[in-house]
Image (cartoon, rainbow, N blue to C red):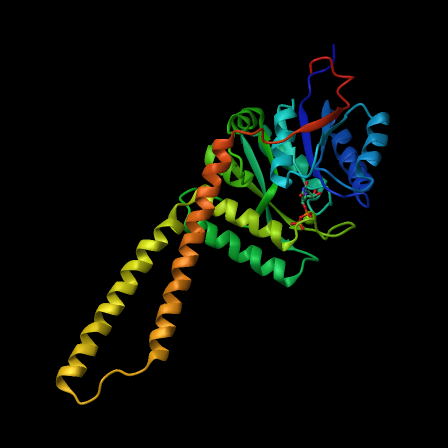
Length: 317
Ligand code: UDP
Ligand code: MG
């Protein structure tokens, strides 16, 4: 009979061949120091490079390592979810593979967990080695999201966090497709606390979050936690009606009481084009929501695991 797993560490990986071994070593050093039974769950999110091969080598030598190999790239948030679903530990830590989140913070998080907190999230004090574009967009994103939603989503906090088994189970029961995991963790509640840290540079390799993925993440966050964009249509409608009503009165008064009339098709065209633009934007916003309703209604599985490695040692799975 195997000893009960106390800690699970979930690491989503996508094309991280340059950093994965280093990351495994640093994580192992920290986890070994804790002296409890643990598992490292690497979720291979459809990497096209040698990541899987390197992970397999590691797993063949270390019985604490598990690999969930996705059939294709499902995205960071889904990879985290799969790792959480498969985890067995009393406490589950989610951490990036690129060592931007220092593994040495895990014992600090565990300390807080032992004090009775069910969610310990890591808040970024500083971000090193990231482009000004990433920093500015991230800064704006967390603040806009906070202003738009009723859920208390902490600012400057990524997915690096520790959650208790109970929170993990609650998360697994949520089947939402376009997931924004950190928002959901806030939404489920429980006793939460922050620990602060300085975010390091990526240890090697390039970011796996191009602008396209960043945009998808922000739209997912907004649409999952706020209906405010949908109300934009009514606000814009009221504003435009008010302005055009005033314009209407002014035009009539000018015609009746002065010699001049309002002239020009150029201004007319500008107004029409401007309004068309606004209408299309609003249609697009509504489309985003409808697309998500469609996604939910298809009821496809969240992810497909093609291979599970490292579970041979563990009879309970
Ligand atoms: N990642 C993933 N699937 C993706 C993109 C990223 O599993 O489609 C992983 C990646 O391997 C890393 C983590 O998510 O462990 C965070 O990605 P990255 O460090 O590139 O993002 P950044 O820190 O630049 O925001
Ligand atoms: Mg990173």
